[in-house]
Image (tube, rainbow, N blue to C red):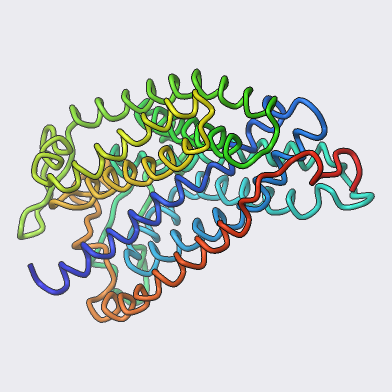
Length: 377
């Protein structure tokens, strides 16, 4: 394996890890979607909002980092997807912007729209954010309608468009594939599940904790239904691979073969799924350890899935319009020099992780009704 290939695989691992962390941190969105169903009183709703308000910036920062890292390491994907499927990405951006606005202004004295309006913004972000991101990530496996003309990369003047989107829906057509919808619903329900476990761990209110534990059981059942539907359909589907010459070809059971060819990735995925299942059992018993199992499990499971999408000579963004235009980590990455320089930056990741851990621990004192002003400011 050449140095460039090693760097490409390394950066796909970094992208996959950031994506996995983002899925876990979206428990903030999951909790927001439950604001009124879990919080029955002013005190309880404010405890929920305050507990989530301590963490929401971590999710937002990870989302921005994920997008920035993708742009820097695999710019052809960024220009193809963000430049073509812009209805989906604009919708995702919009629902995250209104989240930031809501946390800033929801309890400001005499705000123009009132607290209930900004609470509605939080609920919209809580439902639409994970759902849309899950659908968008689903296209890593199911493909999208685009074509790429790499001969235009160095072209000057005239028509220099490298990629074209072949559907007038510009990304919204992804909802027509049930597998994308299943993954979107699975991500949304997983965010709700980890949020319920987070409430059990982080809110000092027995009534709310009891309600969260009871709600976690049907939420877990629905999550498993959609998640298993997606995984089984993925393993039985046809994917796209490429050979040493860069020729792209269809391969039946591609992702099943990927798991068989990469036992370490398979182990990561299975350990993650097992940890989520343990978290589900602990959550039903109101154990404060539940969030650590479901959280770490979701990170490992998503990491395994994303590695399966890009490693082992797999097209991580198949083209439904022109299979030869499908994107791979080998032909969509930055130059070796760029990847090498950026790799030095990743040496600071342990420092960033340590800071996040410190911030998390500093803000994990359980919230009670004494810590909030339910109907005031």
